[in-house]
Amino acid sequence: HLDLAFQIELLDLVASQVASGAILGAIGVFHDLVLAARFSDRQILLDKGEIRAEGSPAEVLAGPEIGRAYGIDVRGAVGNLLQTGRNLLS
Image (cartoon, rainbow, N blue to C red; front, side):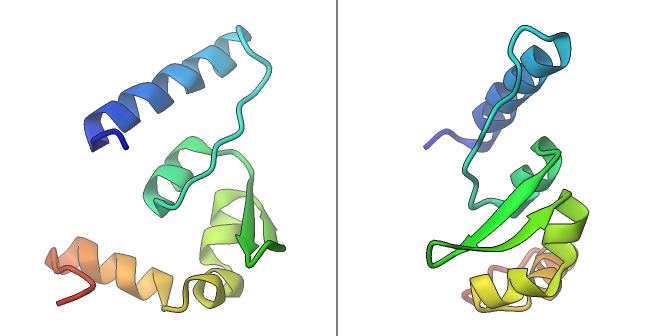
């Protein structure tokens, strides 16, 4: 429940610890797809407790399963939000 600035600060800290070898790796659970894309090397997409996709962020987030799991056209929705600044609910 951190605000965006603190989420990024925390994830940057974890990423730097992994990069420096201070820790071997990190596992995160994300619902924010932008943060998941920025801070992960590999992803597993779960839907109703089942693995639906696994791979790089590009493979998972651009694949067909992401839309099925979220119940919307994720690529279109995120692109629309970035272009227009509109909320999904409006």
